Amino acid sequence: EDDSDEDDEFAELGDDSDEDDDGPLEQDFSGEESGSESESDEETLLPIEKKARKEDERRKREAEDAAAEQVLNIEDEDVYELSGDEDDPDAPPDLQHVQARIQEVVRVLQDFKSRREPGRSRGEYVERLVADLATYYGYNTFLIQYFLDTFSVAETMELLEANETQRPVTLRTNTLKCRRRELAASLINRGVNLDPIGKWSKVGLLVYDSRVPIGATPEYMAGHYMLQSASSFLPCMALAPQDGERVLDVAAAPGGKTTYLAALMRNTGMIFANEFQKKRLSSLVANLQRMGCTNATVCNYDGRQLPKVLGHVDRVLLDAPCSGTGVIAKDSSVKVSKSEADINKCAHLQKELLVAAIDCCDANSKTGGYVVYSTCSITVEENEAVLDYILKKRDVKLVPTGLEFGRPGFTSYRGKNFHPSVEKSRRFYPHVHNMDGFFVAKIKKLSNKLGPAGAEDGAAANGFGKATGDGSDSEEGYEQVSGSDDEAGEGGDGYGVGVGVDDEVPEKKPAGKKKNARARMLEELKAELEAEKKAKEEKRGKEKETKEKPAKEKKEKKAKAKK
Image (cartoon, helix red, strand yellow):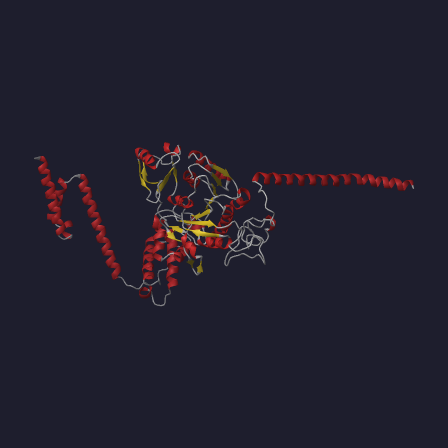
């Protein structure tokens, strides 16, 4: 009987709700009768049902407010006047007023012909928008203008909003020690709420919240997983190293990508984990040990000098240093610290490193011959422009990355046209893919020539070797940084634009056994010792002459006196 009574009560509640739905919305929230009915209903409802009703009411009110606001916006004047909207430069900005003005300017730009103020140009509205966005989101005007030049106004707004929120916490299962299902079960038992990161990855997990510090669990200490952003998976997946290969990671610290490569190779072959900054070596070594990577060798070289040290490898991963415009959510200092000069500096260094990476790769490798280039930047100068540059300087081609998602690279940008194959690269954005802004490209090396296809070895590199003619290699509108290449000569940086990796390549020698790095180091050391020995002998000879000179003079004087 009790069960039937409860069923009758829930049936009555269902009937009441149906009647309420048929009536007008105003009767739900006004009138004494409706008020008394709702009170009687609330007495019989469970607490969770009461909360659900309150949430429904709140959503209805929000929907009504939004509809009313939309009607008011439609009724407003279509034409928006810029005059009289200038703020007092000495007064603090009124962010609500700035936000309203941003919305109005965006609305005008979407239908500029009908909504603009007579006599006003589009440039004036864009200038106003740039200043307001810089004020509201805390950027410098250069970056805001760059985003507007690269994306539409609506997409720029989405990007700026996405940069204000942190990306989800993700981790990568270390398949050298455990499986993803086992790791997920053990972390769930510790109070971690997680899910698979997506169909595109078999090792990634997305963490929603955790009762324990996710970077201090016993599983973390045992090396069962690595805290790693989702975008950092992509270059390793694109490189796809095979068992037994020799692989180079040019900029390895803190070791997330290197340990992933080791897992993909199942601890076979050899990984050269290079890191230029000595202070980052400790974190790299610690992560390699914690994750159980036994096929990695850590080295500390300038990435531009690696071809002279390592020789050829099967595959190369270059996650190049960049301006960081894709990770603004992590590092908000990028908003105000980056300028056009900084991006040019980064692009210059990236070109040098990519030339070195390609020269380290062996085109004759049976299984490899691939280089993956990636950055955490969304600027064209650091991505597509670098690829277009390297296609002219080395005998390489771009191939598909093998990634299932991502936007294709730009083939043209602000009047500059790039090689059509640049479209095979992939771009990732915070507002589209909910991961850090990233760029990935996969390059296949066609031959070991030090220049583009069809060039002869002697002056093949025109700008990276002993170039013919004037040796000029500066790109249009490209500023040289990190020293002058004209003054570099034999002691230059080795990879500068105009003076490059091929400068110290001697004339062709007869084919013979290639000396390894140890033999070259011994020869250099021997040459230094011989030079020191020669210098000491010359010094002794001079000292002996200075000592014997007074004695000779005395003898000559005595001889004269006797005469």
